[in-house]
Image (cartoon, rainbow, N blue to C red):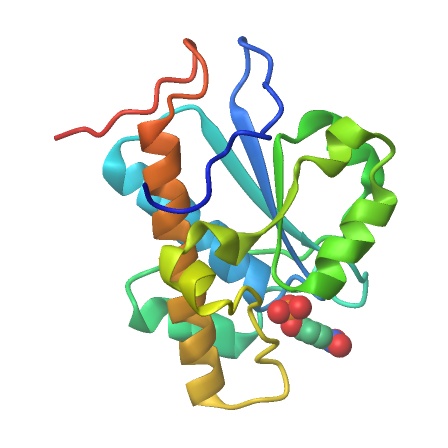
Amino acid sequence: MSGMPLAPLPPAGEDRPLRVSMVCSGNICRSPMAEVILRHLLDEAGVAGVEVESCGIGGWHVGDGADPRTVTMLRRHGYDGSAHRASQFDPRSFADLDLVLAADRGHLRALQRAAGSEADRAKVRLLREFDPQAVAAGTLEVDDPWYGGTADFERCLLEVEAACRGLLDVLVAQPVAPTRPAQRAE
Ligand code: 4NP
């Protein structure tokens, strides 16, 4: 089994996709990487029925593109982050989301506080919970690369990519609803 079980994942409506939101502080580094990478992996695997978005706890960068270092690192690893525009998390969006994935424990706590019900709180997880190696190592946060350099952005991308691969494995192993077929196109 890759990643943690999605057991507490609240059932999405059967007539709509599974909706995943990636959350960090500013929505210009970590969560855009996660959004772009998970969407790319889903496309590559032919998995339909999962929608991915991202946002920040803070609103400082709303409307901005991803940090140029994020776009460069994504491109270097084969992903296109050029279309990203930053947005801020709105607690009202809990109603539309199934899985809200936090980059670090600060985001996790902020999201849990913003959740208006136990059902919404159960949607909030740390992204790296889906990376079995991170779980084994007990390193469940994606540290902020914002004040760092190229090596920090690369470390960030590799952590996010491993977690997205783990999440993809879970989504493929656990078809989420009859109308949201999760299957690989071989
Ligand atoms: P992110 O990185 O949360 O991974 O997008 C940050 C970007 C900007 C700021 C903090 C973190 N900021 O303070 O503006």
